[in-house]
Length: 241
Image (tube, rainbow, N blue to C red; front, side):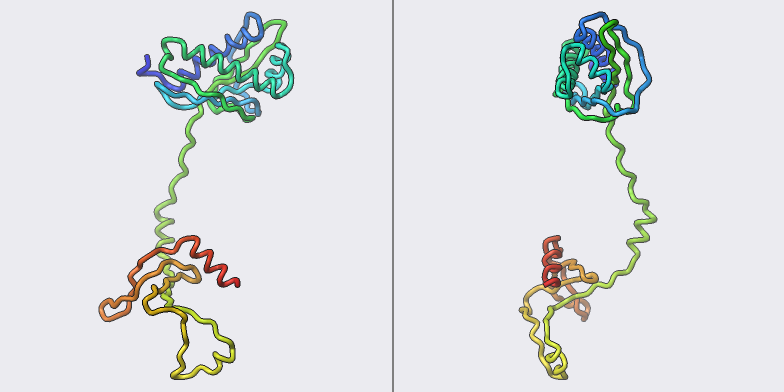
């Protein structure tokens, strides 16, 4: 049976065992019936499953009936309710893993949150006459579908946009008086060595650095490094100062 074991089979068996565990905790003979799956927020216990099959099962409990069950066994308050639900789910998982059909399955510690039941869960209404009743739902946590990829035609349209690429040898800051005195033959110190790499920019964004080369009689740039986010942040700080 281990070869055909599925998460859905584990969830179904766990719901049956959990029904018996609830009756044992309430100290009476339990009656159970299928119920419509609620959409309200409640106690959601997520249990990791490993071994013969990997995944997560969830056990959701209606808040009002969970509180009533806790009071029936002499407990009250959110902490007591949480502890009782963890105890019940742990007992059900331990009992299930001890059966031959599920001997290859191990259950981790439940993770408790307040959330609606997992979609597709099996809802069960259990009651012990003259004691308390409880509504719970057991299901399988399904992986979320991946986001659809960007349509090729939209991406292609963006990739066809022309962007001006600027090669910057260096830069200098001059006073207005110095700019007014510039003329043919003036020399401006760019504050850099001819051996230092030039910068490639798209707009004001630093894209890369490289070495000046000659390609077919024209100047070109051989890229030696791509700019990091830290480089861009440093340039922003330089401009701001």
